[in-house]
Amino acid sequence: MSTTSYTVPRTAQLTGGQAVVEALLKSGVTSGFGIPSIHNIGIYDALRQEPAFHHWIVRHEQAAGFAADGFYRRTGKPAVVFASTGPGNLFTVVPLLESLQTSTPVVLIGTNVATIVLDKSCGALHETPQQLEIIKPLTRFAARVTSPDAIAETIAQAASAGGPAFVEIPTDLLNAPVSNGVSAAAKPSGQISQVSSQQIAEASAQIERCRKPVIILGSGVFHGKAAHSVQSLAEALHAPVLTTTSGKGTIADDHPLAMGCISRLGIVQQLLLESDLVISVGAKLTEFDTGRFTLKLPEHHIQVDQPQHHAGSLFPATLKLLGDIGALAEKLAATTKPRTTWFDVAAVRAQETEKIESLKQESYAALKLLRSAMNRDDVLVNDQSILNYWASAFFPVLAPRTFIYPTGSGTLGYALPAAVGAACALPNRRVICIAGDGGFQYTSHELATLAHYQLPVKILLVNDNAFGIIGFLQRSMFGHSHEVDLKNPDFCRLAEAYGIQADRATDFAGLQQKISRWLDSPGPALLEWKTVLKAPWEVGAIIRPTNLMPAKEQR
Image (tube, rainbow, N blue to C red):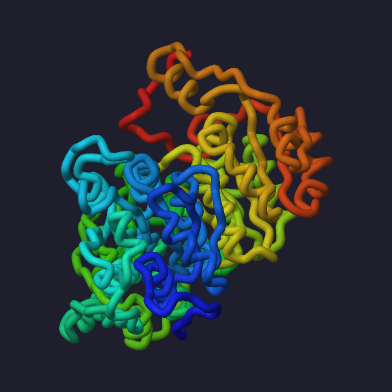
C-alpha cells in the first residue's frame, strides 16, 4: 500500500498527535472509529488536519471496537479505535476479546495520564491502575510509548501484529514535539513457514492413501487471502467442503462441493463418519461449531494454518502444516492425482432441505425469505439470538466476507456496531443486521451513528420480549424460567426518534409483505418482527449440545 503524507499545512515540527495519524497512514491503516476526550484531543486535532484519514464518531467506545472489527471482516483492511484513559480504554475490552479470538487486526490507540503523574496513584483524572496490564492479555501486541519519538515505530509494530494491538500514549506526549519525523513503516516480513518438504510429501501421501476426504474451511482463509487456492484444492480432490461459522463465504454455498456450515452437526456427523481424512484450513474448531466439542473427526486430520493464527485445539491433528495457507493449498493441489467425487453433495443437501422444511419453522422460512430478497453481495451481520443460531447453520452465503458473526466471544450487542463498521467500509453496499430485542439494547445507541452518517444498514429486530434462548435453556434444565422476561421500549418509535425509518410486522405474513420495502428503502431502516421462535436444536433441526441439555426435557 502506498504511503500518505499530510495534505494541509501544519506547524514546521510534528507533534505527537500528528505522528500518530501519519504513522497509521504509513502503516496502511486509513480508517478508524472513536470518541474525542480530554486526553486524546491532540489526536483529534491531527485528524482534523488530515483528510486522507477516514474517521467516524460513535456513541460508545465498545461500539468503536466492534465497528473496527466489522470493518476488517468486510474488507480485509485493518481499522483503528481511538479511546481515552481509563474508562474509554476499558470499554473496548469485550471487542478486543472478540478480535483476539478471531485474529482480527484492530489497533487500539489509547491514552494514559500525563507522564508527570503516570503510575503515581495520586487521583489523576481517569487514572487506572495497571491499565496496560489489564488490556495486554487481550492483544497480540501491547506497549506503552515513553517518548514522542517512539510513537511511529510503536504504531508500526502494532499494525503488523496480526491481531488486536494496544498502543498506550501518555496524554502530554500528544502535544509534545517529535524530533525525528515519521519514516515509512517497515513492511511485515511475511509468513515464516514452518513446513518442510518432508511434511509436504507426508501430507501428499496421506491424501493419496485416502478415498473419502473432507475439507473444513475457517476464517483463516480470509486472513490468508487464500479462498481461490483452497477451492482449487477442493476441486482437485473432489472433496465435500464444510465451513466454520466464521468461515462462511470462503466457498459459495451454491458451489457443487459446498456442504454448508459445520454447526449443523446432524448431516455433518454423517459425512465425517464416512470420511477417512479431514483437511482443516484456517479453521478454529470452536465449542459453538462442534456441539460443545462432541464432533467426531476421522482418524487422520491434516491441519493447515498460518503460524500467527494457529492455536490449541481439542481436535488434534495427525499432521500440522503452518505457513502461507494459499501456497500450501496450491502445493497440495499440485500433487493430487485426478479422482472422482465420493459423496453425492447435491442429493444429501436436497434431503436435508426437505427435512428442515418439513419442520415448518418460521426461523428457517424467514431466512429463506431474506436470502431471496437480498443481493448476492449484501452483507449479513449477526448478534446472538435464536434467529442468528439458525443463520449460522442454514443461511446460504454466496460471496466472501458477507457473513459476520461474533464467534470469538459470543457476546450480545455485537451486530449493530459491527454493521456500522461494515457499512462504513463499503458505503454503497447494503448491510443487514439481525438482532434479538435483548442483545439489541446492549448497543442500540448506535442508531445515532446510523442516522448521523445515513448508513445503509437494515435492522431486522426479532422481538419476543425476553432473553428467549436463555428462557428455553432454563425450562429445559430446571422446568422453570427466571429473570428473562423484558420490558421493552417501542422500538419503532425509538428508531424514528433518531430520524430512522421503522416498521413492524406482527406475524410471518406481515414480514413477507414488508421485507422488500424495508430492504429497498434509502438509508438506515428498522423492521421489528414480533414473534416467538424455537431454537434449531429444540425442534431437531440440528443435534442438541448433549453435555448441556438433559436427555429428557422437563416442560
